[in-house]
Amino acid sequence: MRKRGWDHQAMTNKQRELFNNLAASGKPNTLAAHSRIARKALEAGGASPKEASAIVSESLHNLRKQGVRGPDHIPWN
Image 1 (cartoon, rainbow, N blue to C red):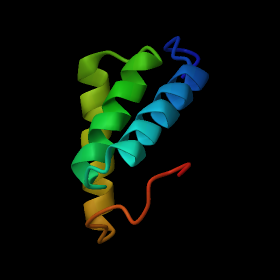
Image 2 (cartoon, helix red, strand yellow):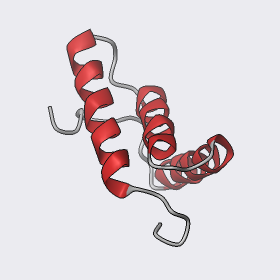
Image 3 (cartoon, rainbow, N blue to C red):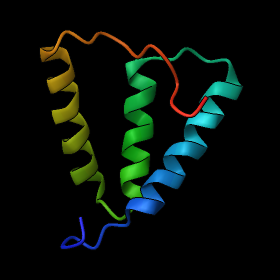
Image 4 (cartoon, one colour):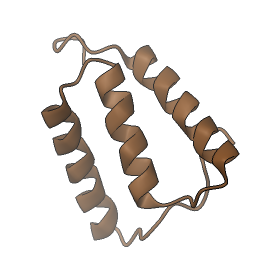
């Protein structure tokens, strides 16, 4: 992350903000929502949209390979 100039704290801050918004919204807690939040958090920390999408895609592939079909909670809430 450092070599790329990405800011982990900025990612974490955006992730917390967006998960709080999701929790307050009453909208469904889905992998799609988590993926959207992950992309936005990565971008907030300096990743390009292309990089963020690639990382999220790899993560989703890994989760599905492990049998994960959806989140069971909203982090920090």
